[in-house]
Image 1 (cartoon, rainbow, N blue to C red):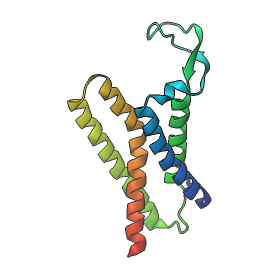
Image 2: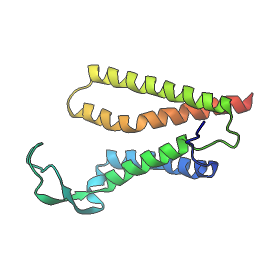
Image 3: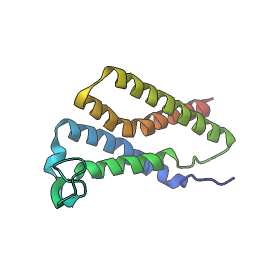
Image 4: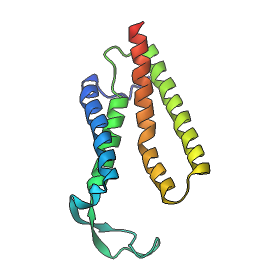
Length: 151
């Protein structure tokens, strides 16, 4: 069977980057500081006048939020799918169970939010939804591994 996991040496650094960038990104998002940093010209593919309007070329945009999004997703995936020092069938089962659990919890929360939250706040919930699958998976996997190693 093919193993699609990253080497163990990436686990610690990617974990630090993931959790610190989550916290920093959340703080920057709450202070609206994303718009003030790293303002550069970016392609205007869809236009700012309407959804189906052809882009007019270029526009200025603060790209810090995009960079943090990529950083959180990539570091979270590497942290989630880095091998343990001993990677056996039990660890693989814990990994699979944690992934299934995180998907159930995450999409359960999305269903609840869809029924109870509206307008722009719902859009914010969907933005957080980008990161919660990885976050829930990491928290559940680390807790399961902690219980496994403690026994």
